[in-house]
Length: 188
Image (tube, rainbow, N blue to C red; front, top):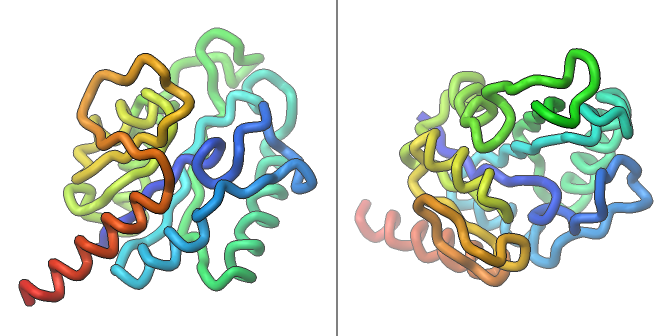
C-alpha cells in the first residue's frame, strides 16, 4: 500500500485570492515545492483535495478549473515534482446553482475525495497525512482516518474541533516529514 500527502489547494498550495480560476492570479505559498519534494523522497504520493464552491456558484466552470489545474501541475513539474492526483468538489448545499446545489460526500468536511483517492491510488490512509487551512480540512482528515492532520495558522482564528497539529508554515510540515522519514530508516 502507498501513502499520501494530501494538500488543500487554496491557502496551502497557493495564497487565497477568492475563487481562483486564472493562472495570472496564482501566488504560491512559500515552501510548497520544497515540502512536496521532501514528501516524494519520503515515499508519499501527492494528492490535491479541494472544495471549489466557485463552480457551484457559477463564477467559473469545471473546464476553467481543469485548465488552471493543468497549468499548476505543469508548474510543479518545472520545479522538480509532480502531483499524482487532483480531486475537487464543485458542490455547495446553500449557494450552489442547479445540479451543484446539494450536499455531497466529496465536499469537505466529508471524506469522499480522500476515500476515492485511497481506492484509486491504493493508499493506506492510516499512514497518510494532510495539510489544510480550514476546519473542513480537519474534519475530512479525521473522518478518513489519516495519521496526521496539519492545520496552517491564519485562517481559523477560533481553532477547530478534531485532531490536528497547528503549524505556522509549510516548513514545519517539511521538517516533520524529514524527521519521520529518518526515524523510519533507522527502524529498518
